[in-house]
Length: 441
Ligand code: GLY
Image (cartoon, rainbow, N blue to C red; front, side, top):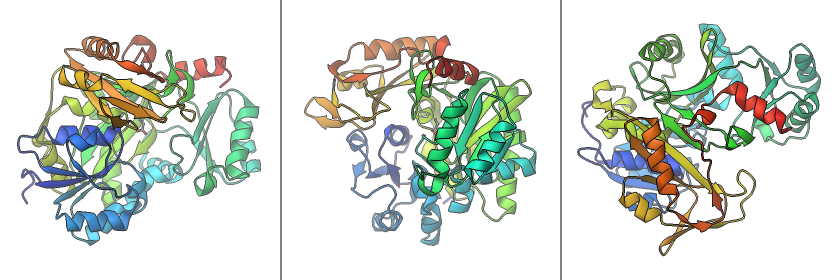
């Protein structure tokens, strides 16, 4: 298939707001593909045929893709990639958007990502890798507060602690290294230098060689307004978070391209979306983390700004023949605000949201997360329930539209941050840290 030919049948793997956003965008292609989702959710069900195959069951996903004769598999979350979904699809001759397991290590092992960045001279905070509590304590003693400690492996967003409290950091380290709280993911930890600055998420769609950057986004990780409260999977995002072509060129030339060349040289070309979580430090963009899939909630804010043939872009990347001209950026800005169980990120109390359909019929964009449809309402038992977003001429207009929509919703047991896209939620690592320290988090 030439790079610019749109796929006809696509399997989207995953079940959250990010996967709903991917399917929503694919459904807006000039020649939309037939969509299948595994396992999908009640929001995705309006766009895709949902099949009850778990997102991390690689053999069953490959069997589904083969049985449905799809011409593209799009991986939403990282877990199937960590379990070898791309390797298995490739072996079965099925084009897949997402990296092979060895390249996915950029997300599944922070130690591996640090090693590659050090080898390539990609700016990243200094870090020591420690396998015992004694080693980690010694590393803490050699550095100053605030301390940043991260478990090496995947920990569902719970594997990072930033704190001024040595006792708190020690407790986290003991949980990881001695009590096995994170399982194998916590057998090694990184003690990392704290770098202050605004944070930025840049996602590059790539075929392993060429790449196209999507509009840069900023997510809000803390649970409460003003970047307070515990870390979450993300409470909202907006894009573009900066309008700086020179910065994007720097990220492409100094971070993305060297890493892609390195992955090619290692025999594991990176195909899919490379997400760079950056801090804009005094010395320039510095990489805090890589992810190997679309950011969540970044996808919910960024994909509404993508015009053109998204399916063809992803298929071209999967086949090693990316056509960057397949898509363009829409003018203006977009925002996505998470509606969450009021106890989130703790276990949920549950509740109901009413009025989402009416919003989606207007100028809001609604993506469903953990909610389940029940007649005209959406029930939930916890987590990130749904997303309300909007586009606008700029972030101010987009956020005004999104919050006007949210204000029309009913139900109970849910809440959202009220400051996504506002000055108080601009993603400053230093501010989030200060707010958390003040609260003793
Ligand atoms: N927004 C951060 C992530 O997707 O992991």
